[in-house]
Length: 406
Image (cartoon, rainbow, N blue to C red; front, side, top):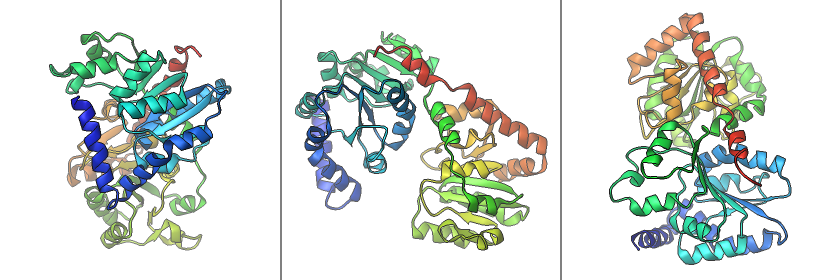
């Protein structure tokens, strides 16, 4: 009852926020049309496999599995649902799925209505998605249900003395495909044993992204033969550090792809620069050659831009946590980031593999950059370690497919 009450209160909060905030408004509009959209777009004679991702990051994690199933089993339809507008709005036209929509809030009435319309033949929930009423109803209907790339930690509610209801939710899964042995051990302690360690499908995804990387002639012209630092998903505390270093080192070039792209933030970045710069949307073959800093003021390019870097700096480590390190490491370049990385297994393992370094202040950043810029052997070895780490973790998608009956 407490869970159901929490869902109701969340629904009310979204409705109240919708007139004043863009994301809640987009979510509500998507929820209003979801059942009609499903009725119109689902084909009656097709068996649908349902994938659910909270947001864009989880979608990218599940994407290799979606696309491999599409390739190997083309007779199935694919339904993709999102919880967050940041996922749905970006991928609502994703061609790898037959139908893309929001997931209605986890109320019992919504759940039954949704499943009555969709009637999936199996369901996949990516990483942290544990919606109690959906999972209960899928279990009651005997629809095979899987958790993919999930990871568990001691502090989660499943392992608390008061977490009995949530432990029951995990028992609804026919199988959990987890990222590491630690997760499997935690689950075994609460008698959940339908668990296999397969790793993280994100490694398969970044290798796929590397193969599909765009050629960016303007970035190539900008780089020339200069040592280039690519700073991806940066925030103001990150920028304060690496821009100061860049200003003092004319032998290097800098690409900045900030996490937040709005005019105020771009102006803040420009004010800190003491060397020539150009914004990507205003770059041409002439001015990009004269610039020492290239500011990426549009979305969708970062994963391809890393290929032009000699060193990567990943932002977020002075805030809530670092962003995607694997998109850079896959290009076999050293990866640097701030101190808040411990919750990200791949970052911890990259450091252990000597393919990445965490810095807690400017002095540490300047020290590691000095070494990378002056010691070619160290630069190459660190980059090699980063790339080898990514390739060694590939294959989770095929392991999952090998254990599922279609």
